[in-house]
Length: 147
Image (cartoon, rainbow, N blue to C red):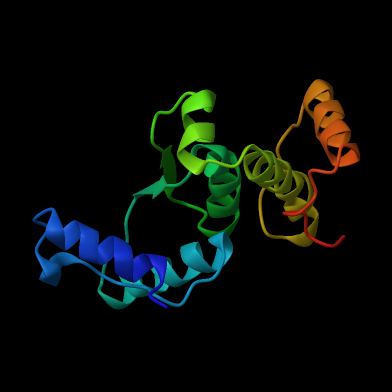
């Protein structure tokens, strides 16, 4: 099975990006590893950026930012994702329960990861926490991590 990094590299080449300007890090299996290992690949190439652009799914921007701020202090972190309305995103995935499970799982990580040392602390408003707990109670739990 080909990993995402290799697929994205191939797509970039298909779009006209010269292969020799692409640095590849194919070993990461989570956001923290992705940031840490990409930083190492850049450093090995003599690249020490002042600004880093993180591209992710829309629902992952907040967690990606918090993770990068924790793991890569001293750089300016910018986040981007495809601009999609929620209904459009649901249609693109084609599985409403999966989307809600992913949102609940990602919010759990926003809440839990600072205590585990994986991300910076972020405020989660009480109404968002209440919705999160309600969705868990309704069974949207397939993407939760064991706590």
